[in-house]
Amino acid sequence: MNKNCYYFLIVFILLITGNISGQNYSSHQTIIPAGTSFDFGSGNQDVTDKYFSQEKYSGTLSYSIITWFNQQADSLEEEKQKIARVISSVIGWAKDKNLDLFYSSIAQDEDYISVTPGKRVIKHFEDVKQNVPFWMSPEFKYVRHELKDLEIKFSRCGEVAWFFCILDDINIYKGEPASWENTRWTGVVEKRDGKWVVVQQHFSFASE
Image 1 (tube, rainbow, N blue to C red):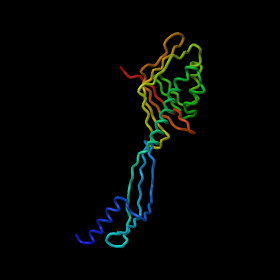
Image 2: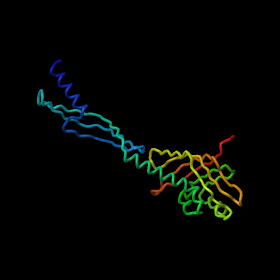
Image 3: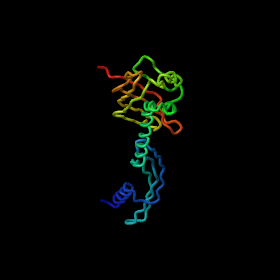
Image 4: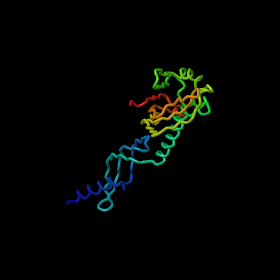
């Protein structure tokens, strides 16, 4: 192997391992909501081979780096817990008939849509208020509710998420059961002004 080949091999190894001086990088870093950083770019490299000569080698090297951030993953788990509490509050507010809790858990505008197994579809926040007299009636009594198999998935931007669970919503109205059991519940939540709210939701029963 001639002397020029040795020079090329040494320069190549130094560029790959990063043991170089005079680095000048152009970098583009993106934080992915799932707790991953993807960094890519290019840099000008200046290398001096001190073993064979003092000749300086220059070149451009493209690179990409993928890094996992535990802190980002922990933050994502915290957001999931916040969303879970909001979803639960959409039903659980009835325990103490806390309307403020209910209203703060849903989008209070024309974006709100709620589809139930019945014929009526609630398309705006103002439509929600039509059901308030029924819920607030002393004859409507909350018993318990449970969200089973709750799954929450985030969009790439991290400001929107969708969920699925099996809902048990157990109540009594005029002494008779008024419950939804093993109800399939799906929906979309959005982070607005730092708080998660349910924007759309759909309830259904599995056909026999």
